[in-house]
Amino acid sequence: MTTSDDGRGGSVPPRPPAGKPQQWYVLRPWVFDVTLAGVLLRAAPRPPRMISVEAWARAYGLARDPGSGRHAISLIGPGPDFSPEYAMTTNPDEPVILAVLAGPDGEPPGPLLIDGCHRLYKAAVTGRAEIPAFVLTAAETLLIRSDAVLGPPRPARARHASPPQQPPGTAPHPHHPDGGDPRC
Image (cartoon, rainbow, N blue to C red):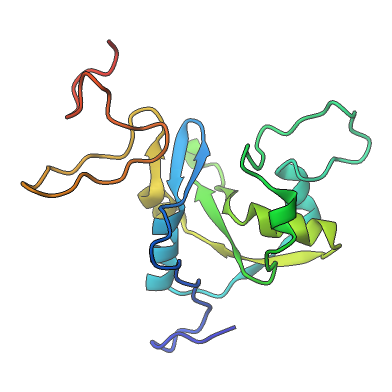
């Protein structure tokens, strides 16, 4: 664990390599900006928390619940780009990132894995009991979450500025590039 320069302690997530594309986690109806989550975590360092590999691997569809049928599926999972081969090259000591979804009507918030599926898989396959996780606050999660259909709020366009990168599935509508009614 490293200590931040401001003396508050905690670990700081590594910076993404230069030129690395924007990273997103999609869970309909939302899109989470994982790159921005890393920026927020670097701006407000905190120590990682240890999470149960077995529980998270089952919840994420990477391991089956004992006694479940062979056709059982998880409602959330790693997605089509998941590669077990790549997962075995990752470092499970690098913290994963959990977003915190605030519950309606005062219900307790619920965590959601938005970064680190490959590391979680490797930890499960290699028999680790726990892995470290950075946990965003509910307020930070709202900052990185966009509606998957409507997309992120659009700032006013500056003249000669390049358009902001959009999350997958939220590109401007071909008939309404500046907003408007997307229901045509």
